[in-house]
Image 1: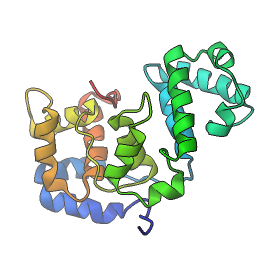
Image 2 (image 1 turned 30 degrees about the horizontal axis):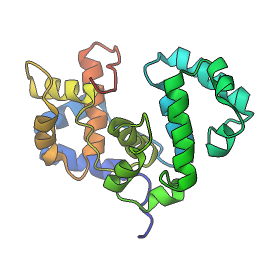
Image 3 (image 1 turned 90 degrees about the horizontal axis):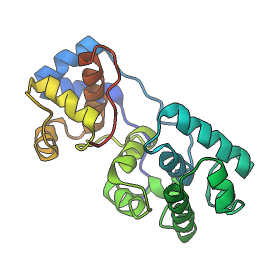
Image 4 (image 1 turned 180 degrees about the horizontal axis):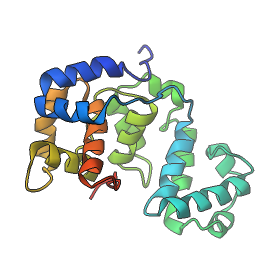
Length: 221
């Protein structure tokens, strides 16, 4: 399969969304154009390792632990080779929980086996295949992979329907009494295809604006 380009034309996506959804178009004018650089290089194993380390922790606490892990590994990249250089006791001393150590070991094993492809391999895979592969890793769920698809790979048509921030944005957009259920959001989002990623970016901004600037948590319930 040929390589899938990283990123998409944000201006063209914005024009599509404004034609398809008047309510969203009004919010887009209020918020303004969004920019994102999809070209930054990344290593999938490293990105997933960091996602595991950040789970269920505040940003500051997780950042401290990640810094300790990098020092212990002697590397800024948390990949399979680096993880093989340290034992569980060392990771535990960095503040990594036993459950996360098990997840990191499983990640490293699946990276060696090719279940977790490198960046070049991911570029040749459709979204559904990436989700199927990466969610085989212990501790990695669909939401984490969707964030990689959106922010790292720049796939244009991802709608994380279980994300609380996206759901709250949809609630504000449609003036609903409560956030829509995932299935209802999936159905409502059909009008945004094939640029549901940009719609999601705006839904997060809408949720933040409704919360008077306080960022809404971007995660599952």
